[in-house]
Image 1: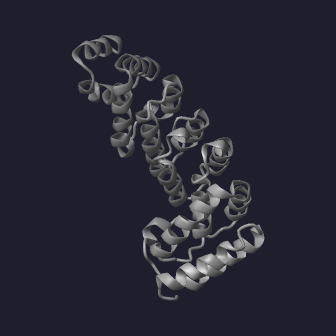
Image 2: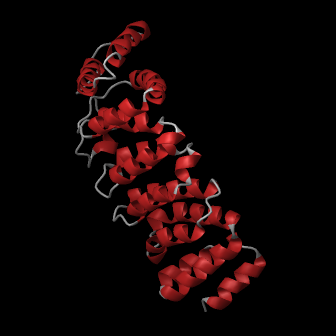
Image 3: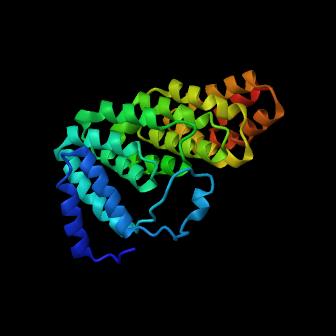
Length: 263
């Protein structure tokens, strides 16, 4: 692994970006850069990779940050080429290359939002490595035009139906971000939450409560009606106990309404 000297790195990135318009050359050059700075022996964050099928170059964060800064500008200036490059990079089985694809599409402007949403919907699936799910969530957490798009919420539905608690937690965090952006279609949010409310495991309850808090800020009445519906649909003690646990989040009027409805 080469040590990171900023002047030298910038020169190498300039050489890489000169191939941006030639997608296959660009992808090969990107792999070469990561090989140069990578460390195959590194065990940093190995706990995140136990179930991963990805290969890791173990590139220093400073290299990725410098590359992403330069690519963000170039992607906005050349969106059509950026899209082609992102698609090609995503086909790799190398973590850093896939992460670069995520960063490229996250920097496209609003004119290309339909492409971004389409790709997110295609990329997010129950088999996607959790580390990439975290990266997608982080890349778009400050992109309100994405977070309030109905197709984004549909994509999150994959996360919430997963059998893995960690993926469900990530989905709930993403859904909470969407709600705080004043997302208008609350029935769609409630539909996405149904599988989670039906089985409110202890491992996901903290994040689920955070989602409910965000919903209550949007509409106490609709959130109360949702919990009443869930209590009537899933009449078991686990669901009832979870609903009762969340009663203090509501004002006294809605607490009474929920208590009366789910007796």
